[in-house]
Image 1 (cartoon, helix red, strand yellow):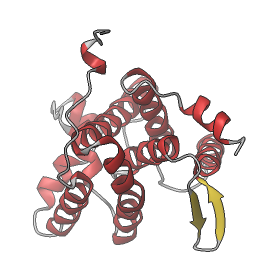
Image 2 (image 1 turned 180 degrees about the vertical axis):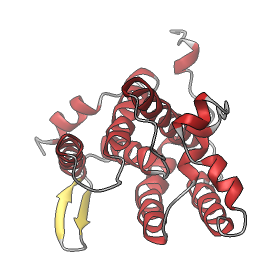
Image 3 (image 1 turned 60 degrees about the horizontal axis):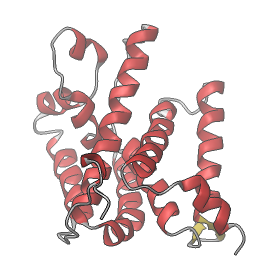
Amino acid sequence: MEQLPFFQRPLKHTSFNAALFVIAANIVIFLAGPLIPSVVNRMALFPPAILIERWYWQPFTYMFVHGSIWHLVFNMLGIFFFGVQLERRLGSGEFLLYYLVSGTLAGFLSFLVYWLTGTYNVALIGASGAVFSVLLGFATYFPTATILVFGILPVRAPILVLGYAVIETFNMFSRTGGNVAHMTHLLGFAVGFLYLVVRLRINPITVFRDSSRY
């Protein structure tokens, strides 16, 4: 039997509702924000705080902080609709690892871009980077699934992913969309793609191409 390298060895397929725990953690932290603002400020990703204060945990904790109720609701709906199904397919442990690694690396790479470009006056918050990676994972494992956009327009999951990628790329370079972290969204896609290819040995491009025949 072929011995897989350590980074490809599968975790035991477990089920402990990791997606729901992630949603609960985000809700608790959001509700705690008005009561403990100093803790929330330490969790958001501020480049000067990492560089000067050495708050090195921020590329991880930023994804549990949200700026408004709608920011929280949209991200949590993404985890609920796509993450729960992906967790059932991967197992809770693998899903949680995928979610946390994707979100953390998306935050860390965003920080590197901010640092290298001298963009220090920025605060990065929200689970969107991790949620975009979850959407990619869902589309990869369920490529024939149809999603009703706005509850009306049926779109297959791979088309939705590609559409989001195009929109986010356009918004990032055109600098539209206000304070939305388009770069982090795209990095969520990128890190999720690498995780799927390197660790889980499934190529979304191949899956999307093959699924288009059906």
